[in-house]
Image (cartoon, rainbow, N blue to C red; front, side, top):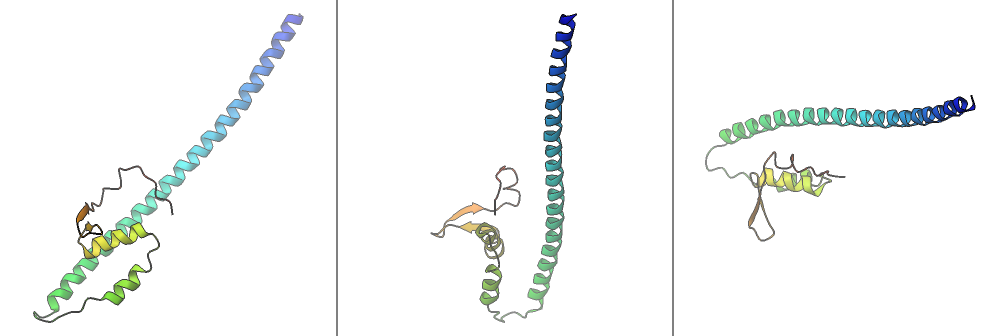
Length: 135
């Protein structure tokens, strides 16, 4: 009989340990699911922002084309340096500023400090790198 009591105590200890492990695993899985949901929500919001920016870009390109078409030939239009400097000063991340300048002024290309073409800016180039940009 004492053997059965001892066996029962052993089973109780094993079950208590299993229960504690199951609770811990459940908490870890819950945190993982919450993290994935956050990432999915963030991804969806960023996709909506990107879609909106694509629409705005198309509208601005149309506006540029219409504006250029309405300016008579031979009229010299000064480059809006002051406006551009003010716009660039609003960027807080230097990499984003560089991308903006490449896109706006260099039609998607980048020149190094010696004026040599060193990078072709491709819209999907960064998506597969797996790097995380911290800011």
